[in-house]
Length: 319
Length: 309
Ligand SMILES: Nc1ncnc2c1ncn2[C@@H]1O[C@H](COP(=O)(O)OP(=O)(O)OP(=O)(O)O)[C@@H](O)[C@H]1O
Ligand code: SF4
Ligand SMILES: [Mg+2]
Image (cartoon, rainbow over all chains, first blue to last red; front, side):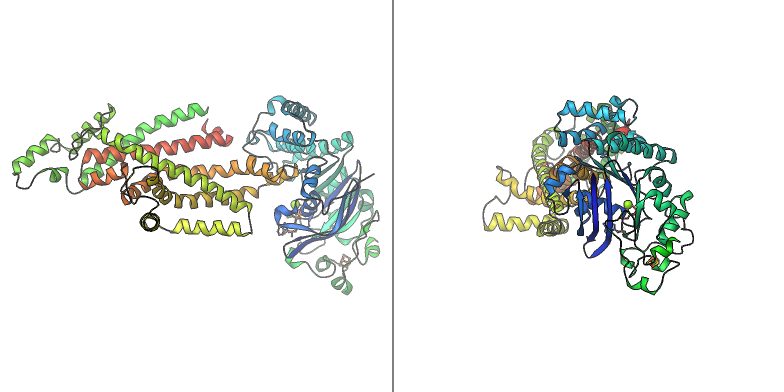
């Protein structure tokens, strides 16, 4: 059953168009990884699905986002609010800044079940304590009364995950959930997310810098570059047989992950910003096999197919 | 924990007040002129003058005079006014309520209206509402208080006759002074509130609150405003001194009784005990204001409570 279907999503923020041509599908119980360097448009994709673009002055420009058969673009704010937190949970990048520092963490988690499940104070508290226990947080009943600054980053990220799970959602969107954490904690959180998907039959959009995380946890992957999707497919296929030159380069640097500082193997230069998106294929200035057509024509990114690669020479590149 | 902190801070007021009392005493006594000039009649002899000086202990060393004064204060005795010939405590007790009334009202008025305007400006971003408040903030932070006071007296009191020009007969006499002191305060509070809301609004946790499905009003009232109140409380605590200081000149312009009027009159006559007593009261009020501000901060922010443990 298709949980989420994004078709040719494009985002504008005022006069600029930082995101376009993003398409993927996600089934129930599946994990899709979205990878790409900093500035490739991963967070904008997440914000677009959550309907939170207005917060940064942006909006969905074209394309469709269908969640469990419901078209989300053009949904009224009130209807969207029922889905947000209720059926779609968001996990953000930096747990240090993701909780309200003035409020105890327990009630912050309670808010979700009270709002979406209509629980009373006591019911919500009981549910929160149980949830914290499920997330392997020791002594949940006393943790409940702590303030965010009294907890470690890893613990805070578990609280954020608890908030996302507060109303038993069907879909989780995790935007680089481990980037801000210690390496040892990173693995724990990723494993926790993987287990949750299995136990609760969730769908998960896992945004990450790290190709090795994708290899270990995801069923599918979509690779992004300079505000657009460049390749998509089942993880095994993509790793065995990357068709886009950029994906190839990414896979080449798995052992290091994709931090902003690590240079991509065999590719010169950096990701261009919104103002400098190149014409035609946005990757052409850095592509080793680019030809004249690449500077003129935008390569097609198939929306429906299992596999897609936005490259004029996808087949040749694969060899 | 908050209680312990409050008591600690309250005790700190004692040594600080002592230090301030020294400064006040020195400034007052080192000013040129003395109260005896205002007491002796024309034609009195130098002997009369010496006698008077001795009577009020002004012939003793500054050191001795200070200790006499401060030890009296310790027992709650503010001494006797030299020129006004009444107990200083009576003079203060008579005038303080007027100042507290004016300062308190101006304080409430500027904080409440300022907060509301700041929130309105934030909530109406990119519309005329924001422009209006921004214009007001600019006006309020540039127009000097005394000028505004004179303008308002001219317009509302003299031309329209809505309010008395001066005095403190009934509540109508309070309107113009409160407006005068409050005007700049509103602008300041509105500005701080608006900027704080804009800043907090960009934080990740606000995005996450939206992602939880909370409504905008809930996020505003339960999360944004408490955060915006932190800097507002800081600035308001600092303003208590400013408002009392402002009240001093505004009382004078509007011819109202009050600590400010008393101070200015006593200063003109070099009535040392009165000047010292009223300055000490003002300093105490400022310290208590700051203290209340700090305690409020600690009550609102668990991180500050942690740091004060
Ligand atoms: N509020 C905004 N206003 C203008 N441009 C923006 C805004 N947010 C993002 N962008 C631009 O959109 C592009 C994509 O940004 P996005 O945040 O989605 O990248 P990302 O893949 O999430 O990067 P990172 O790995 O650093 O989180 C970037 O070029 C960025 O500069
Ligand atoms: S379309 Fe051209 S420039 Fe872009 S990746 Fe393919 S070959 Fe390289
Ligand atoms: Mg991002």
